[in-house]
Image (cartoon, rainbow, N blue to C red; front, top):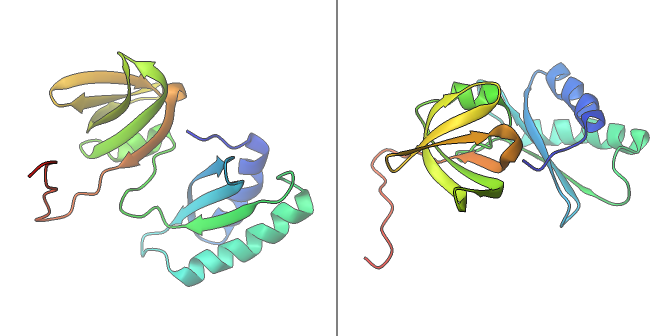
Length: 159
């Protein structure tokens, strides 16, 4: 997963939780120099929530000089294709489908899409079309849930 420093996490998470939100996770996209912070709460997230957290964090990050140079700050709800950052999040969504991309190939591939069978503190186990894969968290670059929309079935290519 696009890791952020412990220092950055230690600055951001207390502000987000102190405002009454869950700090779902953070990622830094070095290509566009953007810090994304995902927030949630049981009743959902509004634009006003994102604006309030952005206002609080942007001042703190600037005062603390937490990110060198110019950067963009994005505050977002996790959305339907919720990103997964921690073992606890994988455990919470056992039984649901997820897409994972690994940093290095595992069994000759880097992209996996399958049902989360189990998760512990070290790895996640996926069922990918009947084959089971154990993927260590340290090897995951990006992980997201696959939205399950009632009645929606994606068309297969060529049909």
